[in-house]
Each structure stands twice: as C-alpha cells, then as structure tokens.
Image (cartoon, rainbow, N blue to C red):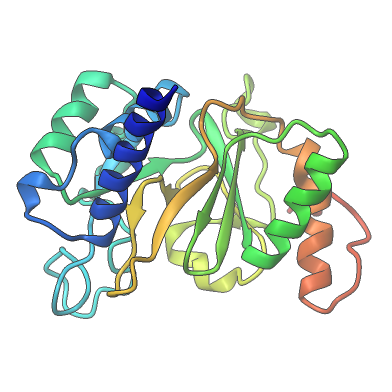
Length: 243
C-alpha cells in the first residue's frame, strides 16, 4: 500500500514539475505526461502536437503577437495529423518534450466548453442526479471542458446540421458562454501548460477512463447553468434552435 502511494506521489510530483515548466527539456517528462496522453488516445481522443509557453511572446511558434499562445496546433494539417496511434504519440511526446497537445473534435468526440463557475455548478448537479458524466477537464484560464460523443459523424451526411453554439478556433471570442467544439475545432488535452509564470494548466477533473456520454444527457444542465451565471435567468430550452 505504501509503495503504491509512493509511486503515485512521485508520478504526481514529476507531472507538476513539467506543468510548471521547470527543469531542462530532456527531463520534462518521466512518464506522467506521456501516460496521460496515451490514456486519452486509448479512450479514442485523436491527438496532435501543439505549441507550448515560451519566453517573449508567450508562445513557441514564430508568429509575432500570436493570438492564442500555447493553445494552437503546430501543423496546419492538424485535422489529418490527429491520431490515436500509440507509437506515433510516444514519438511526438518524446521528441517534443515541452509540447502541449490538442485533440481534434467532431471525429469521435465533441467538447462542451463552458465558463468555470457554470461548469462547476452543472457538474455538481449532474453527479448529484446520478447522470453519467464523462471526462471533464478544467482550464486555469476560467473554462471547464465536458467531453462527449460526437454529433459530427452521422451515417447519412444529409443529417448533419450546424448549431448556434458551434465554435471553431477562429470564432472562440464570439462565444463567451457555452462553446460546442465539433467539426473543424479542437481543444487542449490534459496535461497542458498555459502561458505565464503562475503554473496555470489544463488538467483532468474526471479522466478519460470515464465513457463518453451522449451530449444531450448533459446539455440541459450546462445551458441552464450558463444562462444563470450570465444573469439571463434559466434557459427555456435545453437544445438550441437549428440553423
């Protein structure tokens, strides 16, 4: 028992060091980061390398004034590059020891991305009601991410329809409340480091070992909490109107 606790504590300490960005690059990961990335991939989340915090403009990319420092993929081909292949993810993680990773949405999973306070309220309500909630991540920039099954791959393409909550990287600022990441979007996957010297990160509250739920099963609680925290009262419907 004590040996198991010690092993877990050591893993947590190494991961915390990586998230804080301390230590040389070659010592950035002793297994904790890679293990979490592989667990996400094993759960069906396709991954691709992303930028990481760096001195200067706050991002490892060479773009002056990067609008999303340490939050975007390295490659413009991230949608085709994203994979769940274990060997490929191991190579990326070991050859790019400081890289964050994104997971492409709309392939196997979506992400319902909400303000932190609204997400915390909804999560408590859902768990208290016995609703099956899947993986949930917290981002220290004030967001909570609920991972769900995707609506982006219907058997009949004619059944695909957009939703007013749909969010893509270029439209994030248009959605201060709930953001539905589906086709053509991505989010940072834990563990990820955010810019700054305060150790901010994206980390799991509920890990990828939890099965992905149907988004409809949690949407009402999330929209209701978002509306309340926006000062608009309760949402009148759980499902936004189709375009």
